[in-house]
Figure 1 (cartoon, rainbow, N blue to C red):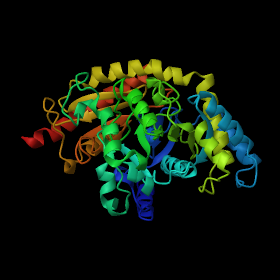
Figure 2 (cartoon, one colour; figure 1 turned 135 degrees about the horizontal axis):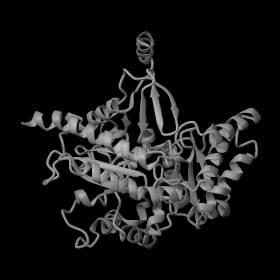
Figure 3 (cartoon, rainbow, N blue to C red; figure 1 turned 30 degrees about the horizontal axis):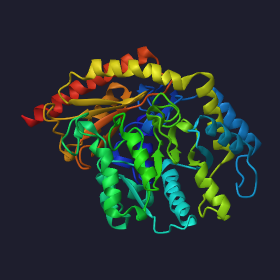
Figure 4 (tube, helix red, strand yellow; figure 1 turned 60 degrees about the horizontal axis):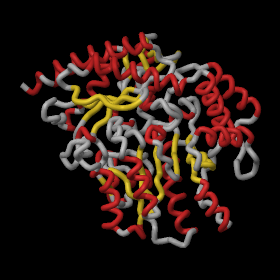
Length: 459
């Protein structure tokens, strides 16, 4: 085993770019089974984050495996521009059935970043085809994260991810995130008059509504805001403002989509219909790469009436194997009632998480929905003062937790883009209450060890 590990470490030098540098070099992922992952020594880890919120059905689901293999045996690739694709046609029909009623068309691609890039281009061309070519700016929120490609990173407000590429990004407007724990206006809900939502109208008026094409949101915040949940009034207000100024509302559901929050899409909790939804990650549960952009009927109608093609596409978009995989995932979600299970189990998940972790002096806030939780770390609970970024608090806690046998996802830059750490957990929908208990017990122990190291170092 030691020789194998050394060989793997030697081969690892040929792989460029380890995201965040969070992968411990002494561990090889050998296999997965249900909610567990196993290393090269057959040690078991609870996959409490599904990687970065991907493995919604867990590992080794035989129904998904069989559907994927069946399609591979039939035909694994053909170019969508030349052939009708039956798995893809069925998939679009299935997605439209549980999408908001105004969303009636799908464009498929391969990742969340690609989906968000696609949404930006759809919004731009939509306004061009309507005779409004001056509408090109996309407003978004500080601390948001929408992907690593240049367009997606341009609408991301996460300073850590942006800083090295700033000169080549679009400098589009940003407004404060609706994150009550770190209110940009230092106000308290409900006396705040939802100023974070009103900021959108102020920004549109300052820039000029004739230039604003779209507003980009994450229904429930992801890595940049550690599962931020806006107040009930926020999205209805945003929808009204977008309608008033002819601005498309684009909802990034790359993490939240396909059941993660206890509804098919996170925005369903607010009863608001966006003009475009993007999703990825859980739609195939990590079994194959795939993403989708779901489009309002009014957008499709403009393209149809003008006879304009959408100047965009990818070689692998709508891959039949990925389409078959996604259909199998949807089958499992529907037949086993897993979206509803997320809602029910989510109540226990948050109850147990708060019970086991809230007493820790470094745990400032626990937030989220369904089976998506952000655990914000602070060095002072009363003042909500974050750890210095250079201390890599979340990364260190993630490593400690992994040594205890539980996987989680670290993130930083929550408070102002350059400070504020959190650990995100988002287990497979098939997890049971006893395993949730075990996972939080392990995180409890990991936090105790973390505090010994991080809090004592300050004294």
